[in-house]
Length: 111
Image (cartoon, rainbow, N blue to C red; front, side):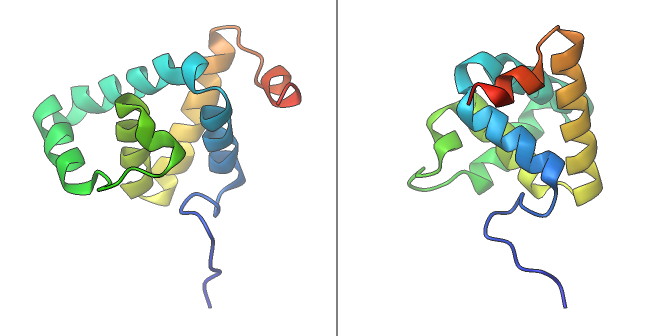
């Protein structure tokens, strides 16, 4: 029997780490979310992203990431892709931070 999780990203500890970083450092990591969206747009087109988001965007926007349109789009895309793509995106996100000299361990320890 498949394990039930409270949040859609709880199945993968790496994905949980990325989501917690985004939640706790929204302003600092917003640029990374924009880069993620740009990469997706390069593959599928901006119109496809906008069309998708119009279908899945929350009605009342109560989640923490719904307050910022960039974060909301990035998280919604991440939510609907297969789990192996979620993991790959999480790994790429953390690698991107490291490549920019951002110490993720330091960020986590200052929470």
